Image (cartoon, rainbow, N blue to C red):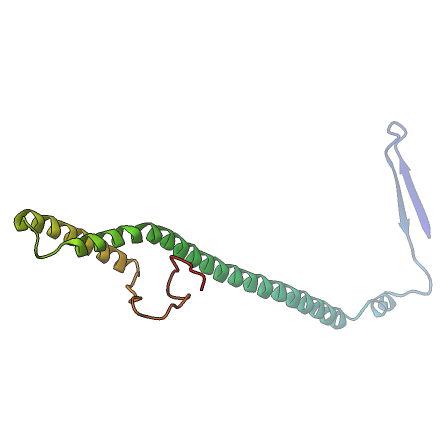
Length: 163
């Protein structure tokens, strides 16, 4: 073993040590034999890369599944929100529709002034038709409730009487 030192006296930070090692027992061929087999090292690296690749693949699949679940949940919430919004608006329009229907039923064929009442009746009928068409486009359908048994899933109770 040889030790070479160089030092520049003007610079206290400049101090290097070089070490060279030559043993009598080691030969250049022995150094290669002591190294790990390159094929074994490549195989180990390949196994490590495959394991890492599998970890990344698993993470990717989990994130993709999370994203798909988020997308489905968002679509479901959007549909529920649209239904809620629609039902809120429709609840406001239904009393108007009922009022138009009552107004139409109040007209009779025996009115004293048929000309003036007839034009008023036609106006209410037009309003009733337009409102009905609008509600139909929004998905509202008329249910016949008169004379039928009360079904809480289809009908709305207006009055509660104890019996």
